[in-house]
Length: 229
Image: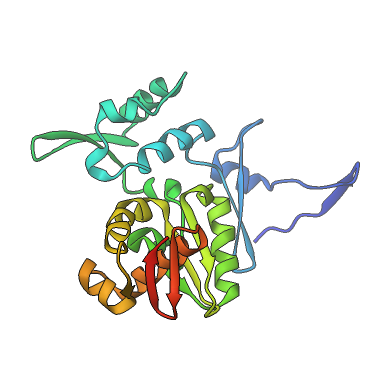
């Protein structure tokens, strides 16, 4: 372990990187370095990929595996990004493979963790199931913060019911199933019968009903009895 002293200059704190660290990481002047705090310890490393290369890889990683054809990927890239894509292919960061007669692009396993965003269990569940019902405000606040960070707030809608539960659904899920609700609610329905008729869970039914009530599309005539507005 090597210790160094810090120095102050114009209100900023600086420290000299020890020679053995410079040599180990192969650092030269104007190189970028990354700092990460892990369990109260600071890790210093030289980035494996440049920022513009990371951007291209993140675009590719945003596609499902079966969507990662060269043509589909090129449609997401702009300006110098197609050249960066070809460079990553030549370096083996990306590779081509064939599956069921379809040529696809893969990301080398050692680089994949660098470009796949970590998500909380609640976030993952929301986008896997399409909806969530939460009771704790702290969980809702944490989820909202994560949605903002990932710029997904415009893909989700949520309301708080009179039962003080939070009903959250993705717009994709809502658009997918809402027309069935509109048709089914042309006559009065209780929650259990609606769920049975639409072959879905009562929890999902309740979520959609709460959102539609908030939008003035559904009326709860009596407690637990719903009809289209």
